[in-house]
Image (cartoon, rainbow, N blue to C red; front, side, top):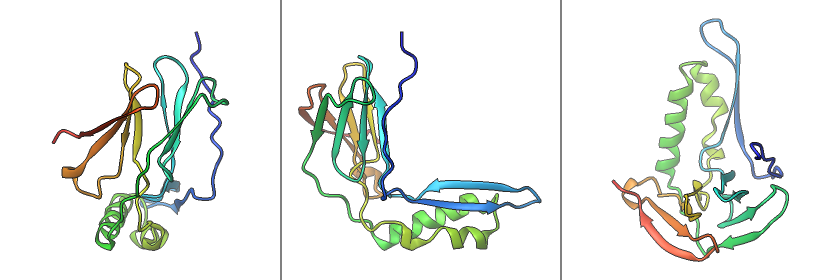
Length: 167
């Protein structure tokens, strides 16, 4: 029985973070969060063993049995969704509203720069593996739940099609 698996996940130059320190109400805190819509590392455990690892800056994922090998590479021709300025502002304002409860609003606004949010979304938001070993990849929905979907691949990497996310 293996209950722990180390997955080789090299850091890339594309990883972006927002950082805050200080706090309100006399408490001192530090906080770091990923920049919204910036590409990041995603992974999911495979029920048959191993894991699926993906960098959302490209539409490709890898299967690994040990965390340090590659047993499969799967990709899909796709174009990342454009992110409108309106959506970028809405996301930033939402994040400022969330963190201004713990930090000074001006400090949050200074740390959470609108220019850090990309004008194109990552290729996908998440990846999951079901008990049949199908891989469910959730592309960015452009900010509209009506267009939300999963791209589904079987365990061999064959693309099965798009499945809308239930309303």
